[in-house]
Image (cartoon, rainbow, N blue to C red; front, side, top):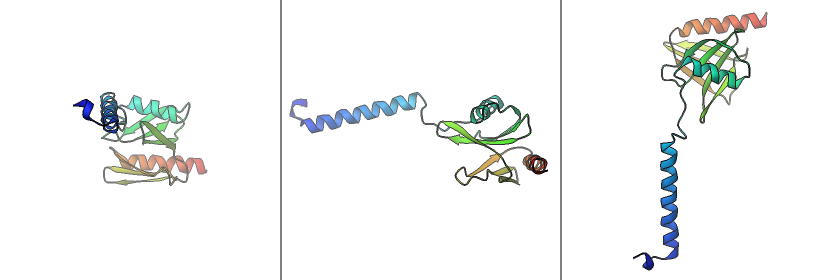
Length: 140
């Protein structure tokens, strides 16, 4: 039967099998999945990778691990969110803002391309207060 198939069809089927094998390997290796921040230590490491030397003192993890808010030892705040297979983060400056909406904290880094980050956390209002205090101290 293989002898009756055209070379183009054989090449097509071979390519299809190769693509399926690579997709299966990527799935098995868990490549391409959105990362999650489920432990404070992981959020601290991610913050230090975003900004070398960022020393996490307090961390609020989103309940589903989609994001984190990190207060540094120097009281600066950084928001983390998934970006590809890693995490992107921004230190929040006076151009940023945040607000509590029920049990959700909505963070706008002030950078349009970074977008809004929503975190379902406990004490969202306390983080808004801390952010306002840091910005007041930095503007004084």
